[in-house]
Length: 96
Image (cartoon, rainbow, N blue to C red; front, side, top):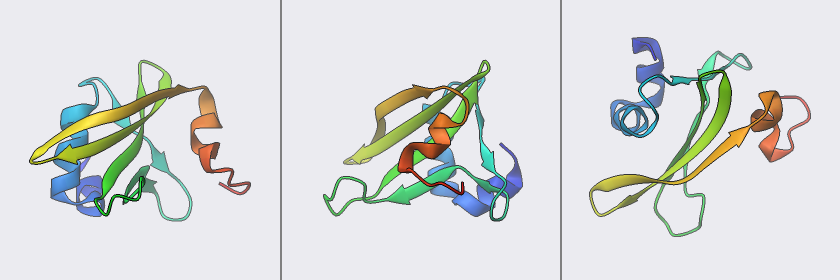
């Protein structure tokens, strides 16, 4: 994960992701629309607090990791293994 990706994600979320994915993993970069890291920061569960989700590759396998913050500590609440591009198509997007 390079410095350019860190600037796009933000230092706070960059540190969270880096601390939670395996040390041998690398963030996946989506080529469309602008070579963005496959990271989203949003309230995914409707509790008025943002979660962080990312797609990463580790040892040739693709994963989606979702992390949640409790008090001052982030922890993964989901880590799902995908097969190839099925990880990217989780949201049903036909043009991604």
